[in-house]
Image 1 (cartoon, rainbow, N blue to C red):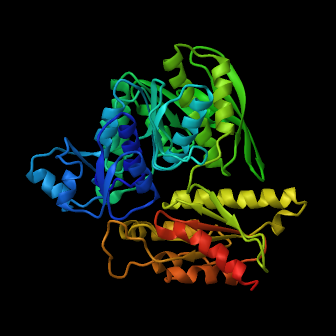
Image 2: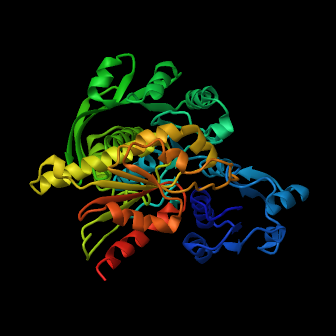
Length: 491
C-alpha cells in the first residue's frame, strides 16, 4: 500500500490486517498511524523505493495507491507495472472489502466524514457493530476503521476522482453538491455528472438514495434521480417539495453553548411518523443536517439488517448520535490558555478547506460564542471574538476560489491567512495566501511565515476569545504552539 499512513489508506490496512492479510507498505515518513499499523503486523518502509515491493520476502499480489495523492512516477508504482503486478485504486480495494455486506455510502462535497462518523456511532449504539472506513478518527474510538461483526459496512464515497462509482450501494446519502476538484473534473458540469452517475448506480443496485433538500444541487438530484429516493432537511423545505418522499424532517433547533438540540420527525417508509430528540454536540446548522442524514440512512440500513423497522432501534440510533463527541480535526478543541493576560482563550482545529466549509464552520463558531455569552448572562455583543488562522490548500483551489475564501473568512472577527499548503501540487508563480487575504474585509491579514502565526494571534486576542486553526495541511500543528506562546506572555 503506497502512502499507507494516509487517512483513507490506513483504515483499509487495519481491516485487511484484521482479516489476516499480509500487508506491506510505505510512506514518506513515520507517524503515529504508521507505528500503530506496525504494531498490528504491517511491514512498512519509511520513504519510497522499488525495493519496498519485497518487504514481506515476496512480491505482493496487488499494489494499492491513491491516484490523487501519489504521483504516477512513484518508484514502487513504476516497478509494479514493470513486473506486471496489478495496481489498483484505494476505492477498488474498499469495494472488494465491502462485498457481501450491506453497503452504506456517504457522499457529497462537504460533510462526508462527520456524517459517516455519526452514522457509525449511531449503529454501534443500536448494537449492530458495523464495519466502517472513514476519513478521520472518531474521538471516542480513536480509530478510522473497523472490521465489525454486523452485516453493514459504512464508508465515505469519495468523488474527488470519481471513485464513488466503484461501489454497489444499498443505502446512499448525498449531503450536498458544489463544484470542487476541478483539477480532475475540469468543469462544474463534469463534477455534477458524477453524482448523476452515482444516483444511477444506486438505482441499478436496488438501493435507496437519501438527499439533502437544503442544498440546491442535491435537491435537483433528488428530483431527477431514478429508483427509490428520500429527502431530509427542515420540515418547511420538505413541505415545499411534495414530489420528494420525506425521510427525516428537522422541526425545531435550539442552540446552546454546547451545540444544538433538535427535534426530528422520522417518516418510517410505509408507516408512522416518529418524533425523536437529537443532541448535536458539534455546533452549526450544517451539523444538525448531517445528524439528520445519519439518522435516516442508518434507519434504512438497520431495516436491511434486522428485517424490520422499529421504534426501539430508532431511539437507539438517535441516542448514539447524541452521544457522538466528534471527529479529530472537525471543530476539535486543542486546549485552553490557562494563565497570563490571555487566559481563557480556547483553541480549536478544523479541516475546512473549501469556501463553503470555511463559512459554515465560522458561522457555527460565532453561534457558539453567542451561546457562551448568553450562558454567562452577557449580551450578544459581548460574545468572545472568533480569530481564524487559515492555511489555503492547493494552488489550483486557491486561484479558483480566492474571492469566495475572502468572503467566507470575512465572517471571522479577525482572519490570519498563511501561505499555501501545496500538497501534491508544485508552486505557481504569483499564487500565495495574499490572494485570499486581499479579498477579506478590514479584519484580514496575510502572515506568510508559519512560525509568525502565534504572535499574530497574540496581537489581536482578548481573554476568552476563540481561535480556530483551519485548513487541510500542516496548520493542524499550530494549535499547541499558539497555546504555548500565549501562555508565555505571563512569563
